[in-house]
Length: 97
Image (cartoon, rainbow, N blue to C red):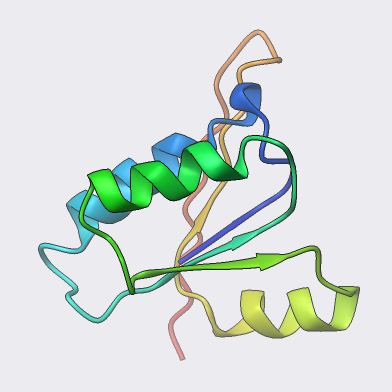
């Protein structure tokens, strides 16, 4: 599972952790890669512990395009959340190989 983008509250990165906590019940080996770097990272790290997701979340920081492409090509779930628009955008990409 991948979340990438700004780690700002209006991009809703906290919801990616919530989603992981729910999906983890069905897919115990799932890992969330959080790609990006912003001041809200410490709050997200606190939520990882609060949700009991230690070891299930990897903060990569900012990645080069080819590194991000590799992670995205291997992921079967991608979360994007945004409250800046007049609607909330949520997308799941499921790739069947």
